[in-house]
Each structure stands twice: as C-alpha cells, then as structure tokens.
Length: 391
Image (cartoon, rainbow, N blue to C red; front, side, top):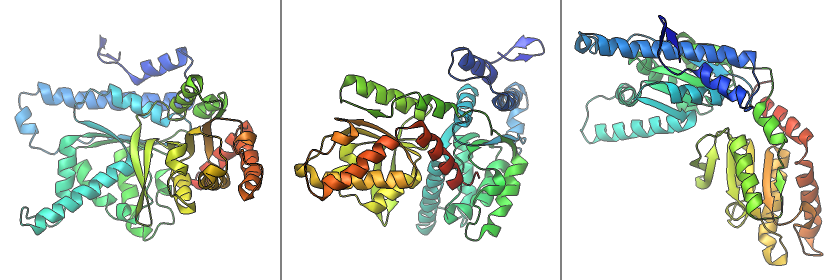
C-alpha cells in the first residue's frame, strides 16, 4: 500500500517487486528499483487525476476542458532486464478501467486498420473529416487513456510517417504512455527512410515520457533459461511439462497471442507468440511448404524459437527432414535461441543409413548440440543485442 498523508491507499509496484525478490523470482537490482520508484510515482499521479475528477463538484465542467498532462515513462535497455515484468506489474495495478496493454506493432496495425475504415467511411459519405488521424486518436483515447506498450520499435515507414501527428493528438486527449524498448528514443528508426520526417516524434516522446535506462546487471530471464534443458527427449508428459516451464520463463509469463508474418504476399501463421518468443510444432514448421525466406522471416522476427515434438525422420519423411535441416541452419546462422522437444537425441533424429539427407543431418545434429550450450545462449544474446542496435 502507498502512504499518502499518513493513510494507506493503494497497492504499489514496490510491494510487488519486493514479493518477487522474497520468492526468489528475481534478485534485487538498484537499476530496477529506480524504475519501480518511477512507476509508483506515475501510479500516484494517475490516481490523483482520477480522484480529482470524481471528487470535484464541477467535474462536468472540467470534463469539457483539455485534460491535464501527465508525463509517462519510456524504459529502455537490453533483453532480459525485466522491463516487461515491471511494466506489466504497473498495468495490472493501475486502477483505471480504460487502459490498454499491447505489443507496439499490434497497436500500430490496429491504428492502420482504423485509418483504412475512416477513409472508406469518407469515400461513402459517412464522415466529413478528410484527415483520419484526429478521429482515430479520439477513438483510441476514448477506449483507453493509459497506454502500455511492450517492445516499442519503429521499422515501418508507414508507421514512422504518422507517429508524430498521431501521438500529438493522443497526448492532447490526455493519454498517458508507458513503454518498454530495446533502444533509447534517439535510436528509434535509425537509418530509416526519410528519418528527418520522423525526428519530431522523438522530441514529442521526450516531452511526454520520462526516459529511463535499464541496462547493466543480470539477464534474469536468460539465467533461468540457462538452468533449464533446451533440448528435451524422449517425448512424453514430463517433456511437455518442461517445455511449458521453459516457455513461461522465456516469455516472462506474458499472454500468448496468435500472429502472422507476411512474406512476399503470403501469410505464415505463428500460432503462439509472446514478446520475442514464438512456439511451433514440428508439423507447423516442417510438414507445410515453407522455404528459406519463410524461416528467415521467423528468425528475424523472434529471438527464441520453441519447436515441439520433433519426430525421428527417415526416407519416408525426406521432405520434412530437408525442411528441418534448412530451419536449423537458418536459426543457427541468425544466432537464435532454440528450445526443442524431440523423440530422440540429435544424432539419432535421422534414421536413414545413407543418402544426401543423412550426410547433411550430421551437420544439423552437431548444430543442435552446440545450440544447447550456455556459451551459445550468451553469444546469441550478444548477437541479438547488436542486431537491435544496442551495441
């Protein structure tokens, strides 16, 4: 509970953080504690706004005026530093009905869908406002005035070109932003096409969100994952349980969602995704007509790939074996972290005694063994940070 004028008021992020430490979920970290304090301060200011609106006898009048500005929070740092855990705790505790927690790319896809619907309505004569940004922002703000974004990143020029106008309108509506990112605001959309048109958004973001780094210290998620097996065999209930436990660790307990990746106009379903982790069955990846471009798109969109129930293959599964070889090569070359449940050990996964696939699978088995090592996980994490512009 937070103390205000000597009175106990509401649960705090600090309380929840202390509980995580006491239960051994994480170790106490000074950098994290600074973010916790900032989140609790923001929590207090949001509650103050709510109470002021409710208690004021002239609330009906204030409701017509522009809402007071509350500076939000932009938390950036390397992978596995607990950014998402802290933001999700804040989102859970903030006592606001109109709040939204979303992956930033999902939010922007929703924005583009709303813009398209507005333009269609304009074409049909159903609305008069030619610029869709203002009405879309009003609609979004009406649905949620506290927005929590995970993995704030800008790679799409269509997003980059509208962000300044969109968020100017959202902030004018009193929206409060809390976001996590792998990069500082100045590094967003770095080297992007027409970046000069994007830069006003960076200044806007800095004015409306306190920028807090969360770097250094331990990668708690990686430490936990390193203590777990990442290649599990044989198949069975215990292996399923271990895979589920590893998934919860890799995703920090985030809600699983369905995603799609578009490659050359084709859609690749991602049946289970959370943050930068994706989970597939062997059948979903290797019994469908997927190729090198598809596997490369998956490798680039996700850091950690889970593959459930890899069977022993032979000549009757030659095509699946070819795809599995290509998949492992792609994940290996891109330094992805791989977690697998399989029917047999890597060197026994291909049972045919001869043929091209038998020869190629020797390399696959060797790579699967290498990808189980702690050194691989550490090296992969450094490579992923470099890819994300952190080094």
